[in-house]
Image 1 (cartoon, rainbow, N blue to C red):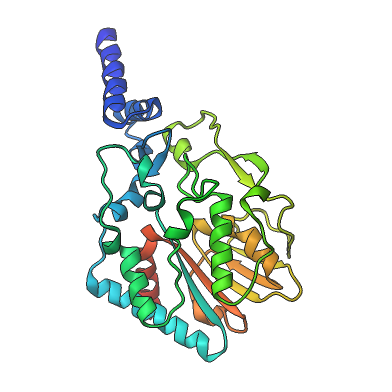
Image 2: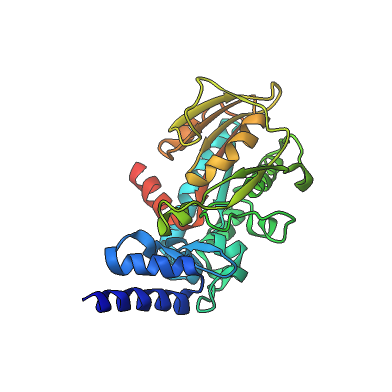
Length: 304
């Protein structure tokens, strides 16, 4: 029995190593064999990079939305744009590219990305551009930068990647942010990745992220517990715009930059009643990860 157990361990480690590379994946593979836990959600790439399998589905084209669904989502967002335009509120959609779109070079050898022009993200952006809806393509901006724009062992973008996206968004909407350069991101903090925690729970992650110094200045009223609070209200630059931001988990890293640029900001973790809740604001931002576009369609459709 002991010999069989040892053989199982060795086979699991060897199988994970051969199939997906780094030892971290071999250990996750072994865990999955024994416990059937969530490690199957993590794909190990090259050079220590990890990817979220669900996000890879859209990169590989296995979660391609139908043309009818894509048309319905574009129309729902156009309706929001038109409603807000009538009251003088600028609408900006931020579709956050999947990590593999920005850093395909770290994918394992057996994964080849889908044609980018046929992805859900690019198909939606093309439809919205034709309708005059402001929805910048962030992928080119996030590639080829001095600092990493995504974190190796996390699903999300880095503080620098979020800064680039926030600057692009507000610039397109006609506003400005306190300016930083890559050289200002000198404050290094330990930043354990969510993908690392999935595959090696309880094992410390050495990943770090770089933050700007000085930090963006703003106040949360009332004080927030964390950037994951369901609703956060802030005060920042007196002459800045009043912002309404509805977001998913990618919004966390945007918070300090947008809050510091805004005279006031309402920052929420829900897309419900978006146009109604944004009334009276100068600009309304909807932040959604590429992999969540089908979920966004479902939520907007249910409201109607």
